[in-house]
Image (cartoon, rainbow, N blue to C red; front, side, top):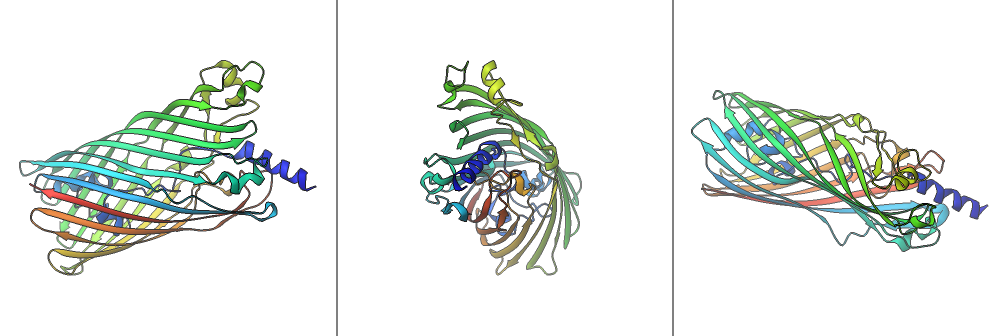
Length: 416
């Protein structure tokens, strides 16, 4: 009976363990240490270089030519427990996932600001010791690791229509990379895909009075096409296949993002912000893979006996963010924030390589601002709600899943 149960679990993993774009696993959905410290509630404030991501209309508030650097390091700590098979594993945390940013913005006259921001809006991944998971992979220590990265270049323009109303837009040129190593029915499976996609962001910022502002941001959906090598060392064991590597392509629509935010100043020292951010994740139900070799496509493509389609079954989500900033002096500020980040996916698609959790994020930081430069620092702590996936035929990876993250970040802006 134990052997039968183990074979059943291995079959479940082979069929159900998916790869793909993570909705919120390690996707911080933001950029900039100031906004990081304020829980990402920045759409209604948007008063530094990171407005290129949050609300490009806010760039119109820049009054001097400036050069900005940003860096964040995602430090995940995942756990996976499957007691019937003696598994109590922890992810390998010796390496983080670095998220960079680089921007330059230049006022043109009194009403227009132009520039460019190059950054990584998200980073995701996990790395596990195959020895710890050998009990669910036929006793063999396979590779279990993933890395998803998106790098974006955003040429930007912002216009101050009046002293109270600002509009902004960016063209977002996205370069995506996906690396995945995992076991499946024929042994080790590896993907290394990359590709380009173009989108855009539009923003409105209104400041009717000094003590209050509000903003709206809309990010266009765009189609991402990732292409590269897929390697299955045992693929030639299938009749008609002669090579262990073929070219694979995954294509999916990255959904639209709509956000609204407010900023309130009860006093000259205190600013309070709040955002509501909606993502149309329901557009992502499955992400099939196609192969250049017709035989590979018949075997590993959609409908094949070893179909590698990603089944996501996601739902739309609404994220709530709150932040605060207090000016201790005219130059020094302290900040804090909170984010409620829902999980778009069901437990049936939960896995340890690109996990999806409901998160509570707690954030804090500080900033120093002078005439010639600004420095901001932040620390974010995210605790994912534990997910207990039952051992049934409908679930991708049974067991108890947990994840928490620390994310330090720092940015520096020099004003000419």
